[in-house]
Length: 301
Image (cartoon, rainbow, N blue to C red; front, side, top):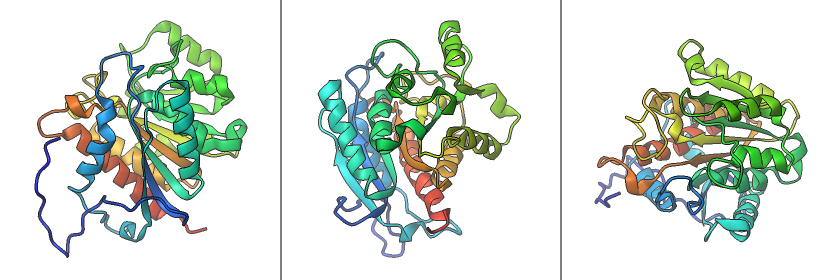
């Protein structure tokens, strides 16, 4: 992103620029987990958390009918070198610390491998009862350890596959072998084509019901490559025919609105490969704000 001077208007406060997470509890905490070293395709996704923070300044925290601006926002900074076993443990510990002091923690990547430490850190001791919802064009059930394997790795770590729901899985972006693996593991798949005929709110309600069946917390993975390539050119694996920007924004708000959702990650945006207008990074920033708007609609406990 190219830094620009932004106007100052006391009647139009900007989002972002949130204070560091301290000992006091926050409503929403942002944390950067800039994974990129094991990506299946070359990526500069490590630059994305900083770019998203910059993009947040382009927007306000105002949403009609919701008191988003009254939320207590915090920023836990970026995890240093989160790739590899030691880096992943640092990321898990940082996520656990943030989630322990926040109603909702939003982890910004980084490639999709961040989902493993982000989810495990958020779940804590509740892994056995936890659930996962992914908005993704891909199953992410590959062998090995990369941005193509986080769902398989979480299931192998103890997550119940029957409480995993994958929304937006695309034709011609997967394989028969991994589709069969999803079936064997009990994963619920709601394909991209189904979203042409079903209301998004109903789809998310179904996904949250399945993922929350164990009574534990839910982590939601927003892999931005689920979007159409025209709105997400900064995602190496986005395909023509994916979700519209408004659709992913709606899913982010619905995720934030659910008391079952403890954490969200935003993955696969490569800020160094974005279009000149920074449309993918700006979408990622708006996903943070949509999650905040959803959080503002939750009943107080």
